[in-house]
Image (cartoon, rainbow, N blue to C red; front, side, top):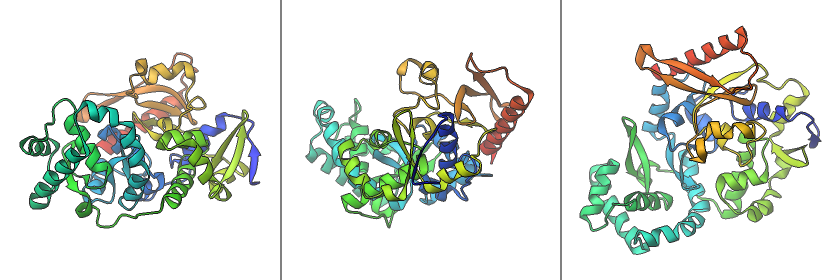
Length: 367
C-alpha cells in the first residue's frame, strides 16, 4: 500500500476501525495487552467497560477482566476529558502529566463555586494518604467520611471533585474491586512503576497509539478524544506521521497504521461481522465525527435527547444498525436487540449471528 491513498467507499472506514480496535481480524491475546493496545478506554460505566474489554479478547470471561483490575495490570482513573478510562498502569502517569493542567484550568470556575482552593486539595491529599497508607485501600464513601471529619466537606459534588483532583495529580488511583465499586488506593503503592515522559515525547506517543488503535481517524478526532489543543496536536503530528498512512475520503484526511491499511490490498475483515457493543464503547465514542459508522438521523436513538448516556449498540459490518438490552438475570437472561426502522429485513443468517453474539455475551457474564 502506498504511503497515502484515496478511499472510494466510506463504509470501509467502519470495518478498518473494527480491525484497529481489535474487534475483527486482529485478536488481542490477554486483557492487559488489549487495554495497552487501546491506550485508553472510556470507563465511567464499569460493567460496560468490562464488556468493552471482554468483547475484544477472545474467550475472556468477566472474572478475567475483573482479575486484571484487582491485580493492577489494568487501572482506572481520569486520564483525560474528566472522564474515567481504563489504561495500562505504566502509561497512566505520563497521560496525567500531559492532560491534568489543562483540565484543572477548565474546571477552575466550578471549583470556585464549590469553594475548593489548592490548599483544600493539598489538605484532602494529606487526609487521604494518611488513611490509605495506614489501613490500605478505602471505599469512596469511607474516604468521603475521612474528608468530612478532616474539615473538607463532600456535599454537593465537592467530594467527587476533590477525589478527581487527587487522581488527576497522581496521588490517588482507583484500585481493587469491591463488587461493582472500586476501592481507592495510593498511586505510588498501587502502581510502583509508571513512566514519566517529556511533553513532546508524551504527545507523540499519544498520537501514534491513538491512530494505530482507533484509525482511520482525523487529527480533530484525536484533539476531541484527549481534549488537547488542536494546534499543539498538529505540531506534534509532524513527528509521527512517518509511522502512519493517510487515507483521503470526502476531502478529509484519515490516518491509521500501515498494518491495518495493508488489509485493503488483501481483504478487510468484518464484512459479515456482528457485534453487541456496550454503551460508551470506543467504537462509537472514540471520535468527534461518528457519522461514518452511525447515521446522523439515528444519533438520538443512541444518546436520547443528547443526555450523554450512550446506549448499547448493534454493529454490523462496521456500522451501527440498532441498540440492544439485557432482560432478566442469571439463566433467564436474554439479549433483546432493537434495530433501526430503516434496517433491511433481518435474514436467517443475521438472526443466527445475533444469537451467537448474545451467547458469547452471556458466557462472558458467567465466566
